[in-house]
Amino acid sequence: MKRKICLILILLTSFILVTESVTALDIEKRIFVRLTKDGEVLLEEEYLLNPDFYNLVGEEMEEYIMDLRRGYEDRDLLNFLFDDLVFDADKVFDSIDDVGVEDCIDFIKGKFYYHPERSGFEVDRERFFTNVLENLSSGHIDYAIRVKKRDQSYSLSELKECTRLIGEYETDYRYSMENRKKNVELCCDYLSDTVVLGGEEFSFNQRVGKRTEERGFLPAKVIINGEFQEDWGGGVCQVATTLYNAVLLSGMKIEKCTRHTLAPSYVPLSFDAMVSEWSDFSFLNQTSTPVFIQSCADGERVRIRVYGKSDGLTRRTKTVVKKVIRHEEWCEDSTDYKNGYESEGYLLTYKKDELTSQTLIRRDIYKPYKVS
Image (cartoon, helix red, strand yellow):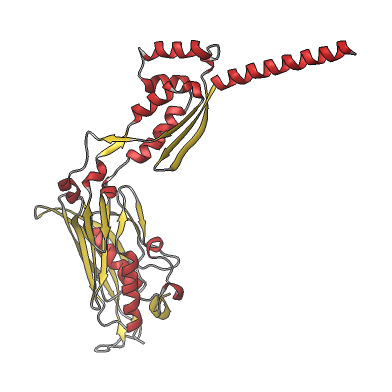
């Protein structure tokens, strides 16, 4: 009996020693990294040691790394020791370093406030890589990200160059009914102070949102299936149309634009934009810098201005009426009917007052209708 107890104790002791040995070796094979900035955790991940180093533990490992550091940059060495660690850290650092023009400009109620100092710092990556290598034996790196001065940053003049007036347009709504006026003004409020980043697509419906009673919109006349009907948000199309023309004149790329079935009175033919629950207006900012949209309605005029970095070109629009379409009941001197049209819309581009191109951008057909 005593011999059995002794044998069990010996086996248990051996198991504990082996387990402790494996655990100690396991700690040498992995490292846990936690990155924070201003108290916010940006990365928490465990990384495995490159199998080429599995036979090195403890002091032997530390000595080997010291030798390698004499011939390699800390970043390159760390990349060799642990797969993905440098890659993941760089993704976090890039998100902090990626200070664009839009980060240095506040656009509030149509006014610009410039902050060139925001672009003057970047993450001190080398400090992080060094910290990891010097604390490998702990198996746990809890690092608060630090920044250092940039070699390059935006100057005040550079920021101002990115906020020049590059396109503007206005339409008249003074004779609209009261509900329609309120819808126009509310829509302008939702639209104003929009920032569209370089390479980003703008959607009118996403920005302005649903035209519902809960969001403050009122019933007013809209064009539905070739007829004027009452619906929530009537008048919003005039804001979309004004924006469409301002965007065209600023040189942005139109992605989606739908004409009305009937010709609106507040804009030349082939330069309207109809928006609804099923139809959107969108454009692409194909430049590398942001554009800023200011919109306002003062009871008489809808005014939209687009600011950004000028390409040195100016643009104008031109309508060509190809055909007038009479209503089937139309007669001379009658004011009960409005004509329909076949029309074309052109964009004219100038450089230093010299016409450089004339581009056909639309062909449209508007139906004639009887004034109710």
